[in-house]
Amino acid sequence: MKITFELEPGDIERFHEALARAERRVACAEECDIVAAARHALETLPIACAPGYIRKTLLSVVQLIEMLEDEAWSLPQVERAELLRLLAYFSDPEDMIPDDVAVIGLLDDAIMLELLLQRSRHVLDAYAEFRGVRDSQPAAADAAGRIGLARELAGHRDRLHERMRQRAVRDAVDDATSGAPA
Image (cartoon, rainbow, N blue to C red; front, side, top):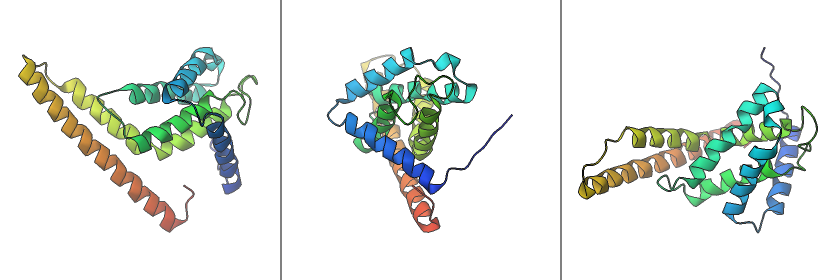
């Protein structure tokens, strides 16, 4: 069964306000602390008991953590900050619906993740492509081969970073001209 609903501008504004509150709570936190809090939430929240949609969406947090910790991907600071905002909200047990409320406590987390993941889709797509390229690289026979492969991968990464930024700008322009909420 598929159920859809439409968020009105006021609904989205409430999510933005909740996101801002979460950001204020972690304003002085280090990136490693935000990631650690997200890992802790993944380990302790009742995700296994949550409805399938919520469970599937919340498990995308694992991919976000992997992306942030992937040194070869070296996600630029602007995009890192956006993903850290998302993890800060996810890690906040006292968000719009407290996480300990049975069945629906994680619903707001899933909705917020969905909203922010849509905005970050070009980053996620680029990272998936980067991982595919890295995983398909042949093994290098010697140090010179490893250096060559590392340079090739770094060049591909840089092109993917540029592409994801261009697509994000294009989407922002399209949203601005269509009147869609950002």
